Image (tube, rainbow, N blue to C red; front, side, top):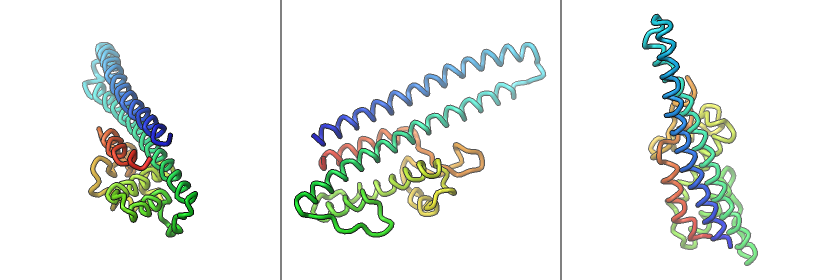
Length: 204
């Protein structure tokens, strides 16, 4: 049952990511055409506005829709980590039902990462995935507790270091002027979802 539930949750998440990103991009194109028509009319009424007026409107539109895309990706990442947490919690409960209690979690270590580490020690062989999950969990925490603003996150310096060579997620000033924030790049969530699906279903 857990395996089926997990598959359904991952499938729904993929549908959400694909639909939401496509919809945002479609709305971007639609709004771009609208402001171009409106700006053309205004420029005819007042030529002194100049071409910079249209350019400023375009820049604001792209900033707004880029931010919307980040909100979709933030939501997707939170949902993905929550799904992994559910599987790990079930594994922990199952182990305890067999009188195989999970060792006490070290201070400061995420519970899900700890549970998966314990199971790796008995031969699951997912150590690389656990390291990725540890980074993604910190990204999730930064989003949830600091709105993705790295300097306002308690472990911001540590997260910066982890993301320095992490493919698809980076720290940039892309979303908020003058404030470094988490940026999830195009295609990243789709790739993370497929990678997670490949190993998570071996546990469910």
